[in-house]
Image 1: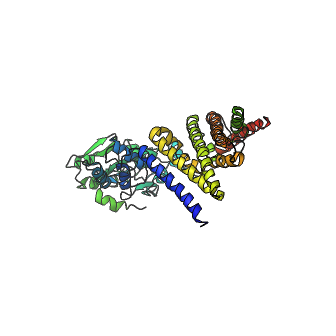
Image 2: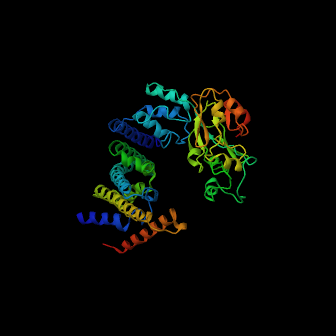
Image 3: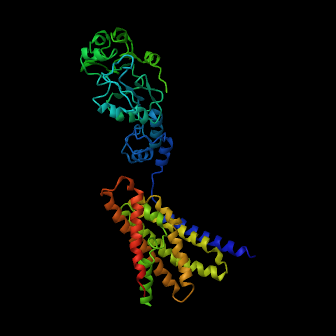
Length: 274
Length: 196
């Protein structure tokens, strides 16, 4: 009997308080959009901020409030977009998977340096130090500031140049913001042609510093049957919507054929390694 | 009688300040004192919880004494405090969501705030079951909360000014915060000379 009294006393207190709280919960109930947690569930949860919001939770809230589209998550892509659209009860537009792409293939073997760099720099310091040691003022410095920023292990430095693995890349944009050269851009995953050079210099200075840089000769533009290639600022530019991926430009390019790649070949030539 | 209440409240606010003299409730004191506004909000939440806790634990204590199970004091008091904090949390979330967001984790942490349990226990040891002890407990609890508010608001004011001052690198952040807190504490020790 000695044990009964305390048990009943404390248990009774608990019951009374519990009941009071239950009543209070009803009175002070906050109406929360019950779709928010469901959207958070289908989001990847990387909190990378690629959508432009503080994290997956903030994005889910914005979607529910109608402040954001359902297809803003670059990581989840169209899969996630259609799931969110289902929750929100709207149609999801097709979202093309985009990937980051480094517009430089000037590896140490083909691009010359202006000075010898000693010490452990990162891209930003190197860029400030007389514009970097690379002869080309547009080329990838290869210190891997973008690699450090990548949360998805999608970028690696190969022979002095950053390479993005399109399979792992989620297009969160962290590397694009990080690159002091501004030579990483976001392109459609399925883009057949891509120009792997960012140099706006004329032909001669490019030839002096890099064996594979685009000189803006325009041969690719002439050979292209679908009219997808134009020359802008001494650099060829491919209109992804017109390119059919015939690969003629690649054959024609006098600069080591690395400049304009057909998607399938691109993967063979540049095996993306983690 | 009124004189007695004034003495109790001055004692709880200044002489035996919960944070700066008795060192109870340091966690929210350091955690929520970055802005005066949130510090004030936290202070009033604590005042409310302490006042209610004083009143309810007094009643609970009478029950415990009645059944001769005083050894259950701690568990019973924690139960009361937890319920009160839950209640405050619901109330804030509904009425003042901005304050609710800025208090963050520290709001549920009032539950484990030793200052609140401290008030309840000091009430019992100090006033016992004597005449008027209920009112005294209530006054003491409220004043203790006000003392907490005073300390945390003063501290937040100092910290706001620290934000814009030129502090040596090695003292930035927590070190200067703790030094400030200890100076404030020493200042409050000065009140210990007050006696009635």
